[in-house]
Amino acid sequence: MTYPPHIIEKAKRVKLLILDVDGVFTNGQVWLSSNGDEVKVFHTQDGYGIKQIRRHNITVAIISGRNSKSCDYRMKELGVEHIHQGIHDKLPVFKQLLETVNVTGDDCAYVGDDIPDMPLMQRVGLKIAVANATAPVKAIADWETIKEGGHGAVRDVCDLLIHAQGMPLDYVT
Image (cartoon, rainbow, N blue to C red; front, side, top):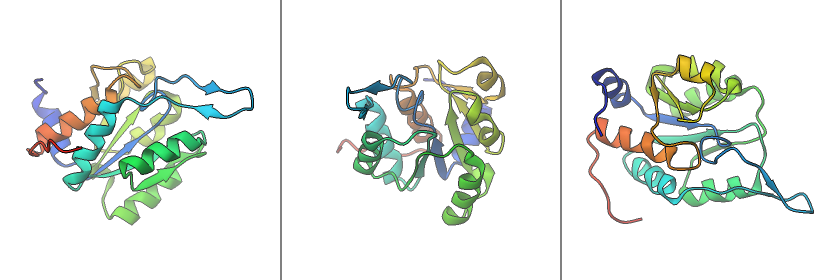
């Protein structure tokens, strides 16, 4: 894939990748069992991409408005360092992450799909919308994934970072 030069420059700087979950890691659908348990579906290609960038010292965080045991399980399985769920105002968590990881907003990329993601998106160096994001999110994004959330969008982001930062591919999962 060919990336615009200004996107490559922004992606070179990323040390912290922050992602929403519903609509980004998943397709946005919420499946509930008859006893109220929530089930989410995650794309394996997204997981491989997350493992790749983590091996090359990019810190990964999720900030989600919903609480989900399946999300917690999958993120831990992928080694995601910062898992924040049930967060309706994402900005305080973002500010805490900046301090914890010792980066600035310009060193961060954020991937979102809907209106609640916009305040945080406006404070990072690389704003990314998934292909199925709402129009207002796409309007403020620097870059848009080819694939939709839950269908490889996170992998698109990881591939951009791998390319921009010249990371060698690791064929081990």
